[in-house]
Length: 117
Image (spheres, rainbow, N blue to C red):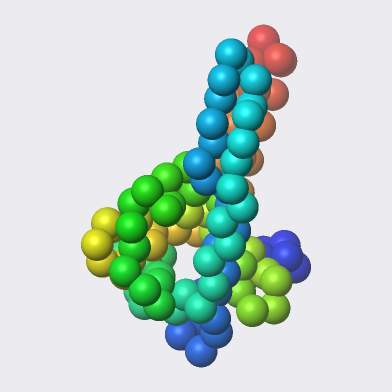
């Protein structure tokens, strides 16, 4: 595993950083809001996804457009990308970096195999 990624652990704190509230007007990005969320705790690995507990209830509108944002631990190591929240709970679901890297490797191999033909 690359040095910049890690597996989650219950003894660390996690941070998710992305942008929300993207407003587009006449095909030009108009505004967006930085959305840093901290204090998340790792709960479990369920069905290949990590579940983190947010320190406050998740409001969907405050997390809309956060899919694909990176989840980091308190040492700055990436654990995965946010893919889903459960509104009115405290759950944030994250796809592990090892899964994402495997998908990227597959896509590159597939593209390379098409170039050889």
